[in-house]
Length: 279
Image 1 (cartoon, rainbow, N blue to C red):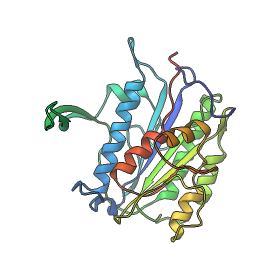
Image 2 (cartoon, rainbow, N blue to C red):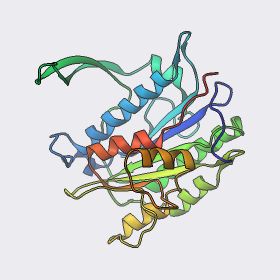
Image 3 (spheres, rainbow, N blue to C red):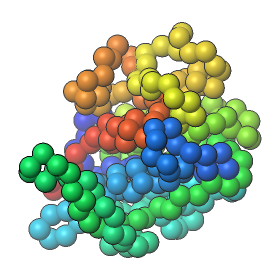
């Protein structure tokens, strides 16, 4: 079956995040956190990167089961983990884990064992900083992503297909990205085509819509566009989403609309729920 390749050091997986950094991402996030949309997304991506690093850690250190990349698009297109666009975007996970920008001390609320809550300081590695400036050059970002994953597939032709996750809060400023999205989805390893997932960050306090199978209920054209640009969930990710309590229909796609901070975290977790084989 497709999407079943083992993830090893000689056959790693690819995770590429496209992050909207336009000026509108400076607006407050829905959900009462008091943080901007850009900050909420940056925190979610940093947590996800930390989880991938930990998932790859063994007794002999962090093994390179993954290549990870971030493309920020706003006032220009840039590689979010260092390197350059488009051919030095994807970084081995060991290098990512060893070189965060900084490690912050943050506070986490935990139960005190007596029915109360206490604050506990935790270390929080930061690889990707929040930014909100400029327009929304999504077409250009997708073009860069296509070149990056094409390079990965040429190097690892039998790998689990690359996962590309696009997080945005608004309409592209440089045209219709659908053609570039189709080009990305046509790239394939011997295990299947590249998976492209999309998340629309909410600007209104409405419930998030996870993994729809049809665009019939969507009121706006941009939501329909994101649906059309999203791949169907492969079996293992479909099961992961179902296990999280989502009532999925056949042909459910990797798209979340009207996402609040919680939905962003859940989207990233489910969308990247792939596990190394341990070799």
